[in-house]
Length: 130
Image 1 (cartoon, helix red, strand yellow):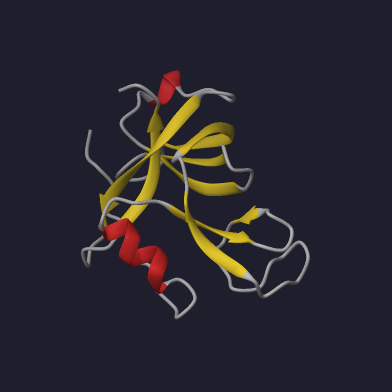
Image 2 (spheres, rainbow, N blue to C red):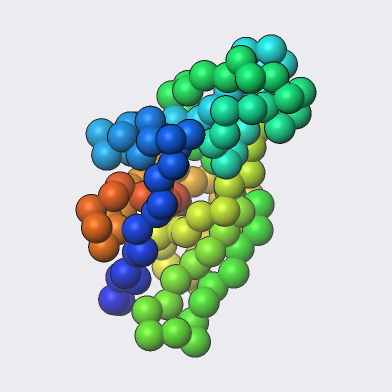
């Protein structure tokens, strides 16, 4: 199977630490110190309580597939999914290293990183235990 070409993300000052950690193979989430909730997409202001007292926290990298769709009518087929992270947030991502016919809602997954065209490490998920 041909692996899909991954476009480069567009880092911002709010996400620079996330991309730097990803390059080291670490998956970070922004977490609010006021309400103790993690959130995705990373931003400095908590979307739950509007506090600006947020910090980067290393995440477990584990989650479960909430919903998914297989893109087969393209030159390089791929699987898109919403993954419910163990820390709470739901993240839109790709499922990799999996037989598309074996992907299922509720399946346990773990983070892995793929290189983008420009060399960024982009977090994606694969079935846990492979």
